[in-house]
Image 1 (cartoon, rainbow, N blue to C red):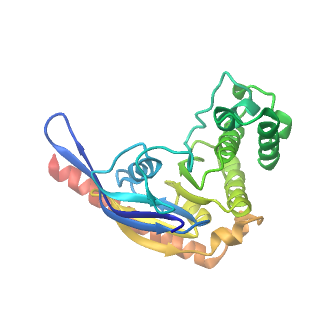
Image 2 (cartoon, rainbow, N blue to C red; image 1 turned 120 degrees about the horizontal axis):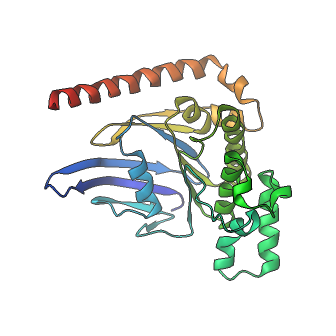
Amino acid sequence: MSGLEIRNLSMRFDLPNGSWVQALKDVSLRVGEGEIISVLGPSGCGKTTLLNIVAGFLAPTSGAVEINGHTVTGPAAERGMVFQKGALFEWMNVRDNVDFGPRMKGMPKAERDRISDHLLEIVGLRDFKDKAVYELSGGMQQRVALARCLANDPDVILMDEPLGALDALTREKMQGLVLKLWKETGKTVILITHSVEEALLLGERLIVMAPRPGRIHKEYRLPFADAGVGADLRTVKKDPRFGETRDEILGMIWEMEEEIMGRTEAAE
């Protein structure tokens, strides 16, 4: 069976004082091969915890994650991660960062160079391959991070707020690049974001999570990711359905945040 399946996933964190936090409870989700989904929700709803379990960085309290029919038990090359900040090796130049994975696999240099040059061409950094990482802007560093992830040829790309630290214009350009890479590579992509507009633009399906215990509250199937490939994203946002769905989700999350604040005030 191809694709990714999250089945009855729960995660509880036990605290030193004897109390505990139920971060996730009975989360189930099926992501088809080549699908791009966005995950959205208020702070504390377990979005990043969910992604870290799929990545293999955390072991769930109960439930399982399966990719292409086998259970995730730890990190593996079939899953690539792109973090909010590039997490690049600053002592290496751009090309060395991109071909790090293939180099660790023992791939011949000629093949590594072919892969890295191709990916740097795709992300628009062909002329920067010999530059040091610290010489690049934040947006360019995230492009390097995307290329490095793709160089390992993962089946699933996991993105944890990958564009959150960028300015508005650079973020919009990177959103277009994410859609371009998704469509051209056919990779399965799961993207976490706090931006409702970004979630609408970058998800064929949009998952809204509710706060503790983290769980799936609502799911949307959307046309905007396909419409945005190679298009002006500002034009996509003018679709009346975009505005209507954005307002609905904003209202939903606002109510959740109000509920969280009410719980906090009651506890005090």
